[in-house]
Length: 158
Image 1: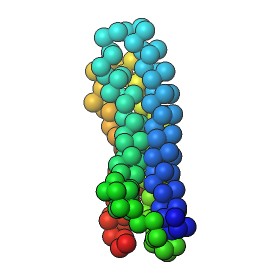
Image 2: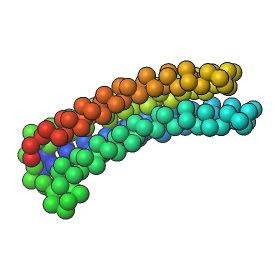
Image 3: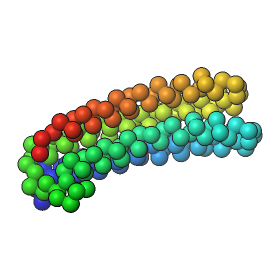
Image 4: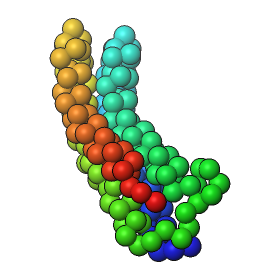
């Protein structure tokens, strides 16, 4: 196995690991807030569940980039490019970094924003639509980083 191929695998792993870690934290902290609201008002379950789940999308985006990367380097087709040169491996590694880093950071902040929005719904259940907008704004940056990673990976020639 070449160093380039190893770097490509590390990039793919980081996309899932970092974005997934951020999502786990964000969903966890929002779930704690949601559980508190549901303990007081079980009727708010559906609304706070949606707000809790929002930070989980970054983990999905990281996993998507990992699958695209593994497919690109041939691991999913059974014919891996194990002799990949260093420059190509670095390019694949770098292409995975946007979703890895932004996924981690945005999921963390989206979790915190979801907690605040859950608090808003607890006090004013009729403000759910407005409460959704706050964590959705954080999502924008995760989507942008997902697009950058996909476009970068797609345009690397092996």
